[in-house]
Amino acid sequence: MTMDANVLITMVGSLGFPIVACIFMAIFFNKVNENYRSDIKELSANHKEEMTKVTEAIANNNTLLERILDRLDEKEGSI
Image (cartoon, rainbow, N blue to C red; front, top):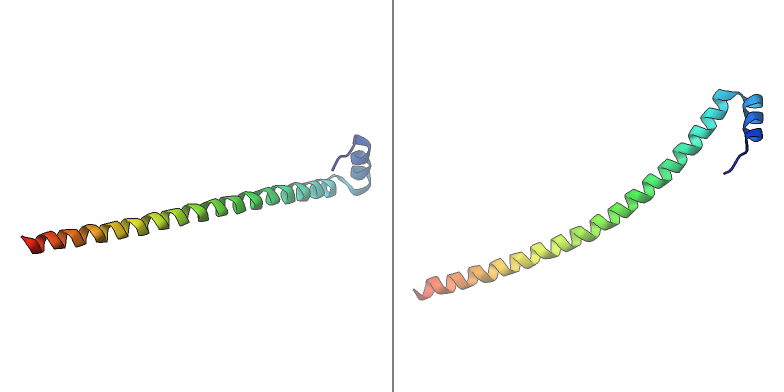
């Protein structure tokens, strides 16, 4: 949204400074909020992907640990 000085001066003259300031603050807040939401969506998607990888790594570690324990039990049985 582009405005030249004449439009801004006309708005301030007809509506008053506080009204125009509130309008611009609302527009600014909306823009910041949209950016924040898109950043949060991106971070959430990245976090979900990372947690999937972490869960897979933990499952692999559990499987490996079970195999190690089974081998240790076999060796203890043969002693």
